[in-house]
Amino acid sequence: MPSKANVLIIDDEEDITKLIKTALEEYGFSVETFNDPLLALNHFKSNPRKFSVIVSDIRMPGMSGIELVAHIKKSERKVNAILMTAFDVDSIKPELEKYGCEIAEIFQKPLSIKKLCERITTQLDNE
Image (cartoon, rainbow, N blue to C red; front, side, top):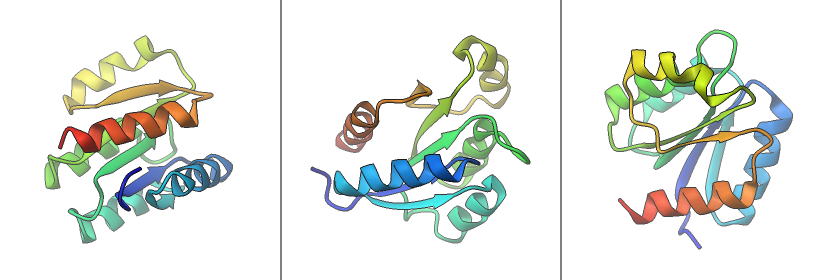
């Protein structure tokens, strides 16, 4: 069980952020959520070393999750990034290549919360 590792969750659907937050907190993580990627980015920039893991949806209004992770990694390269998508993973490869940022894993929705928790724990163990 993690020792209060900080996780930032970003998804434009509030129900999804609430569901993931509740599950991750039960697993022992400290979680903050945002439904607006621009607000999440500003929050991250105000304290870039606070979060160990970022979990973001890919398709959101205003900024994609891939673009968000690219901006975050400019200020804190060590943060682990996990993306979620309801779309085919092959359809996002051009955007991933465009931004060239390191992504730990891409989960397809609906995602398994248990697998997400396991992957976050693995990322933290590898730090």
